[in-house]
Length: 190
Image 1: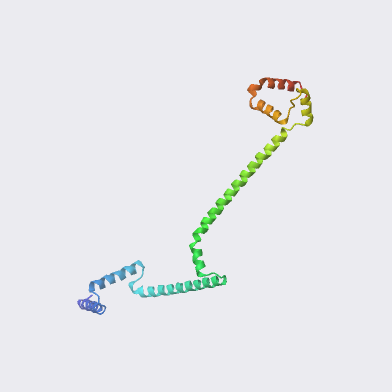
Image 2: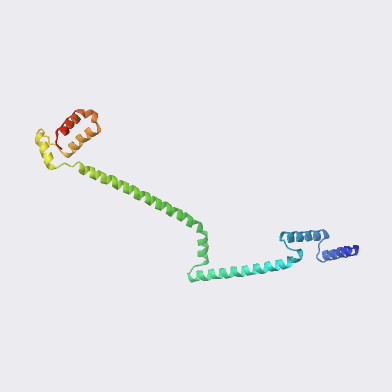
């Protein structure tokens, strides 16, 4: 670059800064920023205006699509009788949907546990019923036993249950009865 061209360039810069009320250092700083911007966008500094125009057009198209979507949302809301206020409340309560779902899952788990516990309790009840019937004795057996026992003190089901429980739960205290029963079982044909 010749000295004349440099002087002419400096004169143009001074005139530009005077017209737009800037200073030469600020102008050079702005030029540096433009070159840095072009470098970061990986384009030539001469292509910056077309790049800006292209992206401005793209931005306008996106704004138009957003406006169309918003219009469709408003139309659908009106079709279903929803108000903007209702939609705002709905959006503000979206986080509650997750909480409700977690609570529903917890409730379902609790109902499952209750069902399993009820099933277990019913099993215990059935076993109790079976046990109470397994201890039932025919009337004929009671009559035969009461004929052999002293009069005035007949045997009843509660007393018989107490006696059998005593033998079952305390075999060490009842070894004589156990020996007697073993002898009877050894001598019986069945």
